Length: 209
Image (cartoon, rainbow, N blue to C red; front, side, top):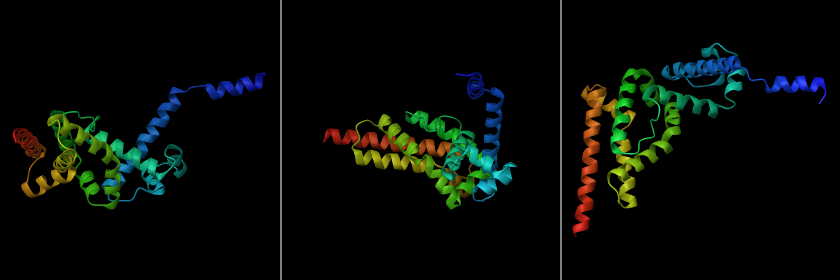
């Protein structure tokens, strides 16, 4: 390798912590702009995001090549901000309840954002991005609480658990019952416990027949 090629290779292989931090800061700025737009009920277009973030549109494309990439990054950033890390990692019903309490507290602290997400097509599209992980978590936690359920019963019980532990559930308890996050969490915790207990009794009754 001649000297010129060696210099080019060295430049390409050089790792700059400053540039990494700069890139990370810009990504965070773009995602913060996404949050502002969604909370205001505005569509996440590259042009709108660039204006809100105070960057050029091509900068947004450099960080997120497609709208799908942008929405995906925003959704998971939003989930971690509102509900904390590991939102969908619950393994047991107790884990699920702990996650639900954090989520409801996050919903209450970010009411405008959550209600905007619940009232628009864009919000629904964004929320569906986490649905596979959410459904798997519900199935896993119900199965751990009541082992041996037949597939259809497990499926229905997991669906019921997801209805209970959801932003629409929090919103309904807040709007129609005037409940804060703590009281709404207590309602859902009680309902989940009753669901699990009912399934256990049903399973025991089938065994004694």
